[in-house]
Length: 165
Image (cartoon, rainbow, N blue to C red; front, side):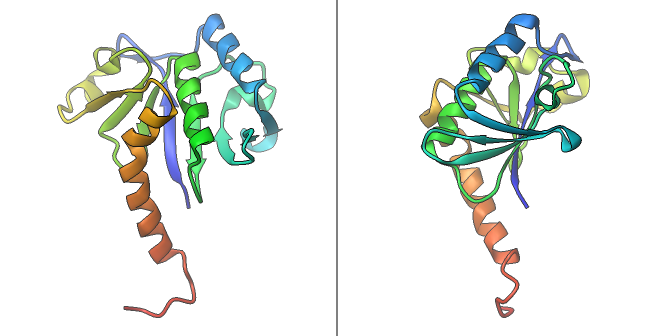
């Protein structure tokens, strides 16, 4: 079970993949961390300088030669300050929009309001809350309450030896 963060591109109502410059910026960022890719499952584990890890599902890093097209990051146990810094840097490098798993009405981006680029079915929903991310602390603040709620919920259902209330 994981708290999922989705990275996606939109441009004038359509999904898109990264430009060559965005793909290069993401590749440069990924060189700053330890990456263990598993092409079979389009999975990569990222180990950060503080030893914390992120579980990522990105086609681009499975060695298939595709441009970066977003993906999913699964948070399981915790969310370190280094993890928040890396995710903020990934948003800035990629130009993606991020939807957090627990409260999908929160959208995060670095430096631009993405709502004008949403497809019509997403644009029709008027409850979107856009949060501009500048750094790790601003990203952590944007999803921190939601992530804490998820962790509390997950701990209640993931403990098999716990007696019923």
